[in-house]
Image (cartoon, rainbow, N blue to C red; front, top):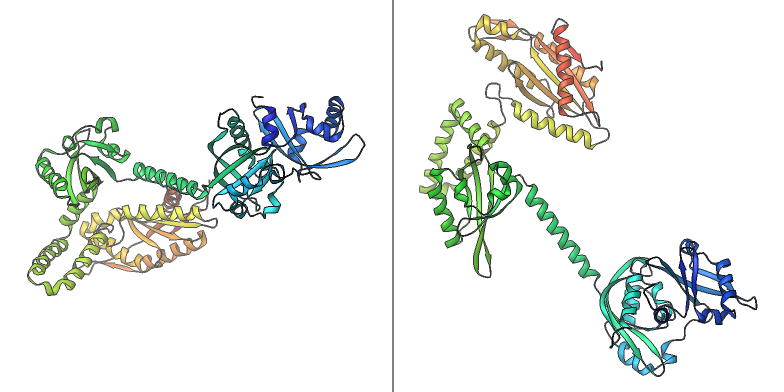
Length: 565
């Protein structure tokens, strides 16, 4: 062992046993003299009475040993592993260590620690000779409960080796001082408290003691852990957010970027960092973007909601919407933080909506007129704000609505189905059903009456379906002449009833055209159901689709429920 045994007597106890595995390798002379044995006899008694492995399982930590006169002596003990050496320090319950106040200079101890607001202890031969009220209060003990107790008994097991080595190392220094270290102690409640420990060896009248100063750093450690966790959360958010994040220098050089930038631009981080941001911008955007960023650094003015066009590695053009703000360090604008989102698809959708819907064009003109009116008449600001809010809501609704039937479109159906499947798998009793409807012989209507009549059938059917489902159900145009209905929390028997009710309603409702033409329409319906843990979105769609094909194969105008093959 690399520690001095004599020093261990002062740090832990005069009564020490050392083990290598299960083999006893050392018995202190003090213990042997206390029990009245020669060394060989003492070893035989220890080997009969003590097993190091058993000591770690024993609770409470007490052991009884016989003296040579066959009198029983009760010992309390602590056990510690130092590398491959097992160390047991014993305390005689009948002869607990005299306090250093009785063996040394009590005036020195009182002067040092009695009135101190810090945690102070005096250790004499491994036992607490004196401690102040501050330390007792933090650990939840009375002073008399700690006095005479082994110091390592209240040191948390995982910190014992560090404590012993710190005290041992101090004996090799000229001033006998302990290098500052962090040690865990155990409170009376069993919880742990962390201290920063310092101290050293002092000598009174013929007495050498160990003095310890302890600083409670539990709150500091808690704050440090919280800070590390916060930094980790920020790092995860930075890398995993779907928005692109860039740090740009005043000269326009990209200093850093997150993974989303690489995904959107099609470049690696190594390719992006260190290059000018303008290298990734479409040529016609360079001048206005340079002007905007110059103002950003010169005036510190935040950029919000601007758009520009980026070039990807493959040469594609993407429309992004970005915000940027300057970061100041010690009064200097050192860099800018830029966050952007790829809105190419959104812009494409907006263009399609404008082309298909004349009403939207009129609405946008109305919005422009309202804006002009706002500048001229400040008194109508509240009314104009409400109109603008309604228009935005309408735009949002149009982005998820099928232009022909005024019900949800396929894209919104996919989003809502994903949400429902997440809910199903989040709850043990989760269930969802899906109906897929197809108009029977729809091609015949288009061929016979024209596509305008076919569109009218789709509209009338959508209106009929809207009045046939619950408010919580999700009705959408699945594609062509197919419709889909998501039934949250609906078991298969309920879904079957809904399907049969819809078939009956369609079958008995005449579908009319503008010139009075009436036709009979029927639908085939497939029902699929998923419960908690059964499968994903694709599986649910597959089940409903398979059931629909089964309904088509069985003379149509009917409902079929998916069944396992």
